[in-house]
Length: 306
Ligand code: NAI
Image (cartoon, rainbow, N blue to C red; front, side, top):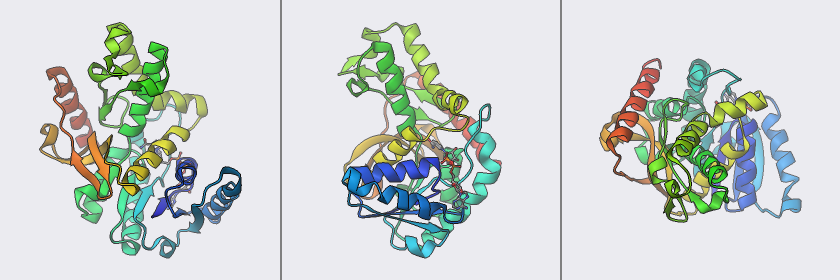
């Protein structure tokens, strides 16, 4: 299993590290436009192999895509991250050009590759990769819901004073501060509804804290986060590589599901060796349906600026 990660910055390197630590891939190729940067990150990571006990071979390349030839999975993290006070949507101008050229270069060397899009604004970048490459929907996956759901589970565990592993919860719709939809109604602690443990007001607060999860970290760090984003990407890569049939909310091209078409939005999907193997349609209530539609409308406005 060969995995390429384009962008050896904060998220790309963290994702490569988690992939190596989980020890399921034979090879990870890091690519970055900055001279020597990917090579340096790869060497540093490889010097962890004997310490951390992994066998994955990590190499780096400065924009030489021939090194990525025959990749099964490619992750696009290249582009600029947001600074405090910025929205993800404000990154579109620079990131659209980068994501378009990177996806073309990847496909030339790896015609069968499955692409995972991370660069923001992620739902629009995922849509752009569809329009650029024309690949079938199962092979283009946007990473947002996996991270937002992990942040939701963290906030739920804090509120219920229990380990995050006891908690299940999903965030769907757009990967944006205003557009994401944490499904508080379906959140559970070991199968018991979260509403049995905390008040409705507290649950609503958990949802609001989840929505600004990225912005909160950007305020604290001065740039966007990388540990949880890297871990979320590695979970998706592993689900595909190991054909796990795991259900994870991801941004995908909708064609009628959830009442939307010709748009990439976060919904639960089953991930296996073929990428997105099924879109799972859950029954939303009227309020959730209205929020999903509103979120889609905002994504459409950003897509129109491409
Ligand atoms: P970073 O600045 O640390 O790394 C980005 C890397 O991309 C840099 O090393 C840069 O040299 C490289 N790069 C730029 N243009 C390139 C090109 N044409 N080819 C190859 N490499 C190129 O940024 P960070 O923090 O890693 O974030 C990366 C992207 O991921 C940002 O757009 C950020 O907003 C997004 N992000 C998305 C998340 C999600 O949930 N979807 C979560 C966190 C970040």
